[in-house]
Image (cartoon, rainbow, N blue to C red; front, side, top):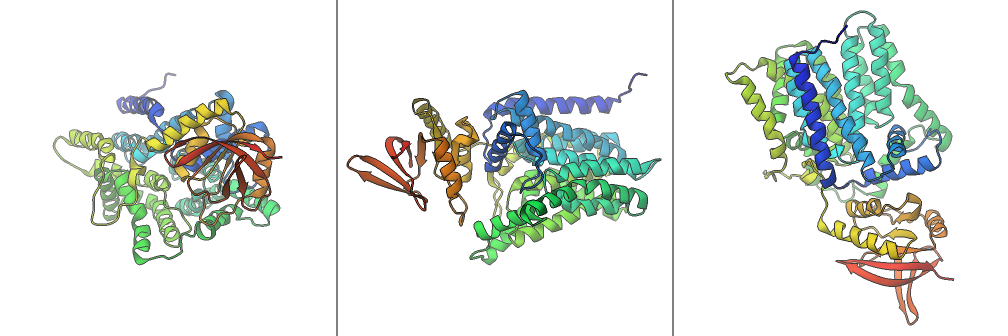
Length: 495
């Protein structure tokens, strides 16, 4: 029997294809601006070299497996992980469309999914190896199968599938752990489906907590490590002023308002208001959005959650479906033209430098194509050129999260041949890791800032000597050149 597709289904497929093409065109112009993306690529490369079952740690293991899988197919650490995220980003549209089609109608599904497909923050983060994009793919699948579980026969089977998708999401990001009860409560009147969903969704959290307890004696080692980084290493709560707390409190509302872009955000908000005041059945889907939003607000105010616009992606994927209510409720002449113009305005509006009477913290993180300043490009080009003449290790003094990790990635060195100096405010130099690096890389290149935090430069009559604070190893060095305030040295371990 031939499958039957409606006209709207065909339009939806076309929109997804166009979104993939746009991202592929943007890929060569994008730059990895997130240190986490580089770290995730390096972790996957190390895992490929020595595969094992990841049962403990800070970050969940699924993203490592996914990146390792695409690198196994195409060994290109710069573009292969991006290609993976591009297809995950486009794939989000499929369950999102069918979820909205089921809860509202297919025309509303096309409208809301088009908002997502050109949502600037989603485009931006699909152009880097970050976990948020595959995460929202599994969250959206969870929403779709929970919708199936809300009615019909054998709904416990759909609840089980929803739980499996959420446990996969939980192996990517901890926000899914918060969503387990928030989404489970949707099924509370269907106790069998509710219990099946909770069982399936808790599979990974139980596995991960058990592994962390065995390895570290702390079942919540991952979240506790993240909090420790924020509070004790980054010192985000030191010398807090009232304006700092206000900035934190308005950060994620801003990230949604400017990230989705104002017109589209207001349409989503209007949809929520209509659902509430009309007492529509879709009110139940407000529960996960409200729970996660409150969790974010409490976490950013107490300093345990970093202020990254990309974290708002999960809020956005829970918010955007409510634009469907606006779509089905609005009765205007030229209705389709109005919505087409609204969708067409999203990308251009994301490039506007917004001015407002309150602090704007989100900055360029709402721009769809991630870019770094010219200094990072120049440093990277110079390092690549020098690396051909002085093969070996690459030791990077810390000169900002974005630039330092970008240079590390673009060097195309293996992670075992790269050592990056600590960048956290109170982060200590890991002497063991440093010695291990120097043992494997007795020669190479060092990039130093004007005032190195962990190194001393000694100009002697017989050349330049470099020493590390807290380490007795000394390096002989030769100045190769400078790019602005970054100095390049070749090094070798002194006898």
